[in-house]
Image 1: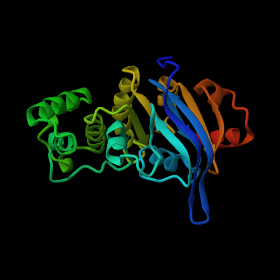
Image 2: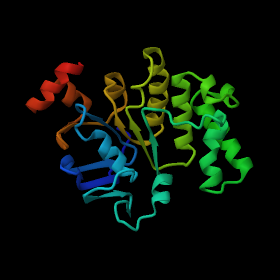
Image 3: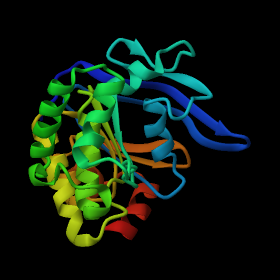
Image 4: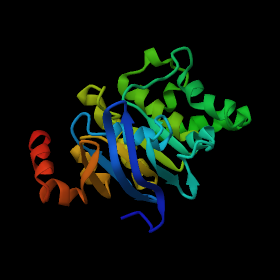
Length: 247
C-alpha cells in the first residue's frame, strides 16, 4: 500500500524472560517505512512486551531491534535518542495533571530537544489542531474526556517528530463513543505515511489501515498476513480459535 521496501523497524530473534516466564520467544519481524502493522493475540501473548522492547521500556534477554540503521538493543544505545525516534501511546493517557493540553505537548521538545519556546508552542498548536483539539489547548486533563486525553497523548508523542509510532491498546480504556475519535486520528496518521506498530483488536481500523496483521500467542508469532488473509482466511488453528472470540 503506502510502504517502500526499506525496513524501518527490524526485530531479529527477540526473546524476553521474566524470571521463569517466557514473554517473547525468538520473534522476528520487519516493518517497512510507512507500513502499519497490527498485532493481535490473547492476553499474555507477548504483544505489549514486544512493543515496549522497541523503545527500550523492556530490555530483551536476547536478540536485536533496529530502527533504520540504529541498533536499539545494545547496552550503550542512547535511550533518550531512541525515545525521540520511537513515540509510544499507552492504554492510560499518562498526561501530567498539572499541565494544560498544550503544556503536555510542548514539555518534551522544550526539555529534551531544547526547542525554542516559540517554535515548540507553534508546533504544539499545530499538533493539537491535527488531532482536532485546537480549542482545548488551555484545558487541563481533568477538563477533557478520555478520548480527548488520548488524542493529546498522541499529539505529545508526535511532538518529538518520531520515525515510528507505537500504540499499545490505545482505545481499551475508552467508552465506546470515544473510540472512533481516537481511531480517526490514527487512521489519518496511517494515511499520512507514519510507520506504526499497533496492538489492538479494533477490526474496523485493521481493515481500513493495516498493511499486515500479526497474530501472537505464547510469546511467538503464529501467523502473519494481510487483514483479509488473517480475518477471512487464517491458516493456523490457533489463529482460527482466537478469531472466533473476537469476530
